[in-house]
Image 1: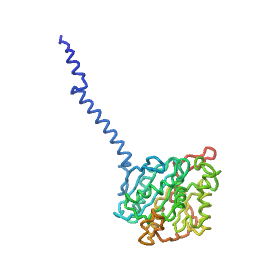
Image 2: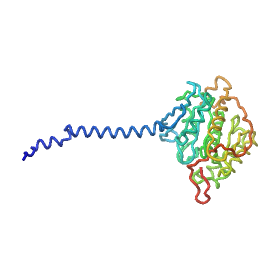
Image 3: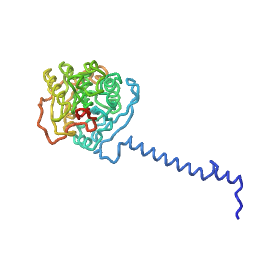
Image 4: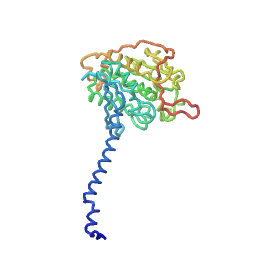
Length: 340
């Protein structure tokens, strides 16, 4: 019978400093590091297997003093973007979505189709249901105007005279709300099935804090003032069964009565990225600085461009193109209608 190992030998073999334990700890550490690396790639590289049609996706965080929190953002740089003086489209997501929601192949392909006219596209995060306006939960519109856009302009060598803003559902409303607060900061504004209502009572739960909040951020009432969207190229689209169609038509009417000439489209369903980017690319490339000092327009409030009307277009018949319905939007249990 073999002699039992001595007490000292037993302690040495099971010691946390033995070679066996050191190797086991090293393998465990490598496994954990590999798992974190894989997760990091998923969140930062945005699924490298997806076809981005030559575009690069940049991820970063913004320390917001206005909202007192750190917010993520995605910025898509098209393959043929110039090295400086780029144009910019700020695109706002819908309710329940985030800055990653529209990073799909159809978006990348449509952006690439614009070739050298394609803008840099920046996707900020606006919370689950901020509706992109200053309210009790935070000053979301101020964040976009005073923090997000200025940082993107500097970081990506954006021409401050060539900036547009748009969005889907909640983001479409937010685009028109933010544009009215700084019409001299933008060349164009687009609402894709924008979540717009004619009264506080019609609004989705949580869209506004109360009736006073709704009235302070009523884009239809704002559109009745010719100066709210003066000089901006305007876009509105919806579907035949869009839950926001009545509000969209009321906004169109207010815009036209105050002298605006919005491009208005109606689709059969889904998203029409080709049409969206064609509109934004054309509007941004038509923007011209009014004078050399316009480079300071972001901070001084100068117009930074010549005001040009967009051609007036009435609702077109439903087409085979897809519209900007928000497929992830929650539905109202009572009516089954899609909420933003």
